[in-house]
Image 1 (cartoon, protein in one colour):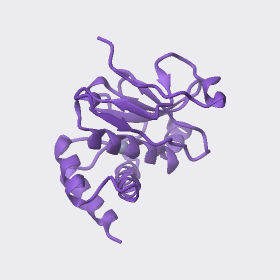
Image 2 (cartoon, helix red, strand yellow):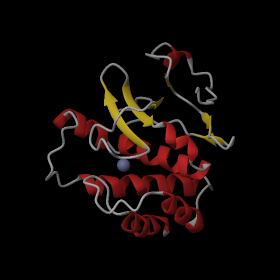
Image 3 (cartoon, rainbow, N blue to C red):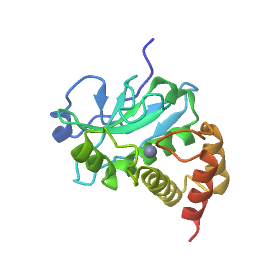
Image 4 (cartoon, rainbow, N blue to C red):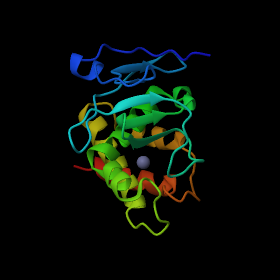
Amino acid sequence: MKRTLTAIALTALFASSAAAEDIELYKEITNNAGKTVPLRYCYDSEGIAVRLRMSSHPNPMDPNYWGAFSSFVPINGPLIDFKPEMLDFSAEVIRFAWEHECGHHALGHVRELFNNYAFNIPQDHKNIMSYELAADCYATRQLAEAGALDEDVLRRIMAAFPANDHSTTHPPTSFRLEHALQCLAP
Ligand SMILES: [Zn+2]
């Protein structure tokens, strides 16, 4: 079944670099409840526009991980992948996921992991968990600045995430919430 997506016209610059029909730079998408989800334009640490790919591609770092992930594919450049289940979530969860993944790009995590490891990250890589917390902080601040997030919203978003107590890449959600709440503090 085709998902409902509203693609916004790209600038000529980016339209000419679109590599495949399902890889676009979206300004807004529609979730499965029919709600419009505005997604901010996102640029990586080199200033390259990050595109959204709706697909079931596995996360190269954590194949069983749900939802969304960010990657760098040489022919496509920086990407944020949304698995189909992302569209089952509320608009605020989807926006947070987008901003979290954008944080991985904007803060240079994705290029670091691609350039050094081609995403075959050693188990003892020390920065992975801290990258997740930094991306949460980035998303929290971006959305708070946009007037789209406060403590209640942040708690609802994190409550929608799996508890994640045994992930090799992500800290437990309860820990992520406590950390993200600190990012809200002035
Ligand atoms: Zn992440």
